[in-house]
Image (cartoon, rainbow, N blue to C red; front, side, top):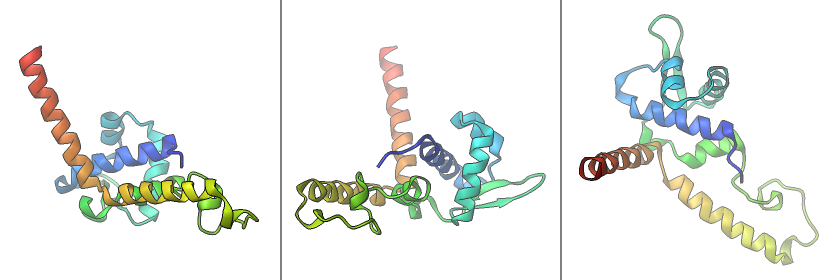
Length: 150
């Protein structure tokens, strides 16, 4: 598994929307400014996320994007699979892969299955709400540090 720039930007945009979940629609330019994502690239990503049912949008004045589900119901694993594909570190580990003559006796594949399962367990457990909470906690710790040491 490799998280592409597109995958990273998708996660950042979704976290931004999660942080603003109860505040109504979020305009693209606000996400671009806050997350430092190229506008045209973000537009493409948001369309993918909308078509997958993660977002809803409204066009026109006062329009924008919002999450289609609460932040605690969207896992990072779901987002990564949607944007970047399977979590498998090797092609032979993914479901639907071409069969290999050594598949049953391959120690490398066996380890990579364990890697995929461990990765999926973590990423499927962590939600957008969890990331928002981590972000808030890190910001609070940074502010405390600055207050005492700067």
